[in-house]
Length: 419
Image (cartoon, rainbow, N blue to C red; front, side, top):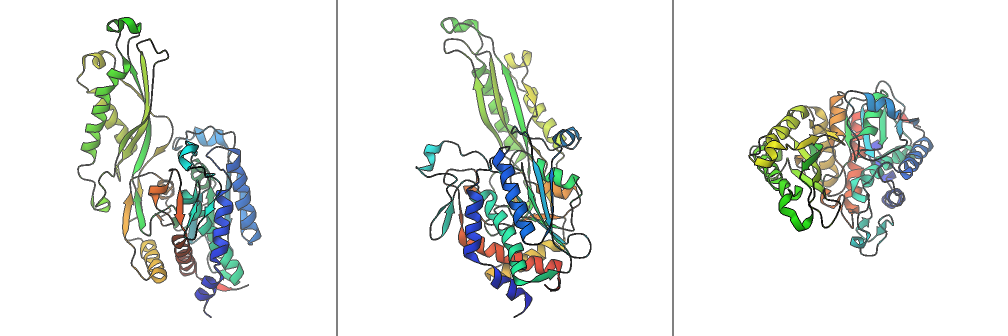
């Protein structure tokens, strides 16, 4: 039996599903203690499978003070980095990267009585918060390492597995991992891609708007200015700018009706039912175009709001600040062999050629790309289930992705012998 067949034979599908269920049952919401607990579990598994494991506590103050800090939104008291590296000569030929954190569950009633962290299993699907985004990808990465160990295969060049925190709110974990010096020749981030290969990401910048009104008693509202009404031309300006920024999205986004969305996610106004609200605070995300400097995107947004033709807003301009995650765009360099290598591995497993596309959301890809590590996305799951009630992943996708990753690792890292 050749090496590839031996490793594929060592990939136990039932064990990978069991591993995924174990990961989902840890409620590792961004910034929580459970996020650190899951990092500890990942570190112990990698060490058990004979990788050289680096575990360190992130120096939050130092990372936040850096000029290129990617931002964060969740409160956190600590964070840990975990990197496991196999034996082999030279720097890692490939990095498999996955984040352990998940978004909050939202309204539990929308889960129809199911425990979001229960990892409910059917014949074809595993349900639970994080099942799609992105614990299925994390499980695939770990399963590949386990299969290499069980098959007794040594790689000629190292494989590195990066388990990171805080992807959901900016990328602190990936930023800290790269700052520690953990890089490689190429990386695959196993975010959900529905069988396609994603070679580029748009960016996303979190913004905060403060729209002033003038307070008055509700019974004499004509004496005041309602901040909610003052916000309406602001919202209209945001929608006009969104249309302008999506007129020519480029070939990578063919078929995507809105690759660079601008959305208002939260709106808060007023503090008393019978008062005219004198302040509205809105927060949202601004899509950053491929190859666009985030500073230019911020400037375009601020200019659009400053130019609103409204008598009240001319004298009381909208205050714009940029808290939270600041995701630039990123892409795999044109012609880099990682794309062809991944393409072939997927085709060899599934018998079909995968499509390539770009994603309209930010990810850790841009941090690796900025650090000089050519990176793409390929992982199990459909992003339409991410962050949603009844989040789920198709187990067939999990199986196929894990097998394709195993082939990619063997071919990119090479085989150095048996244990």
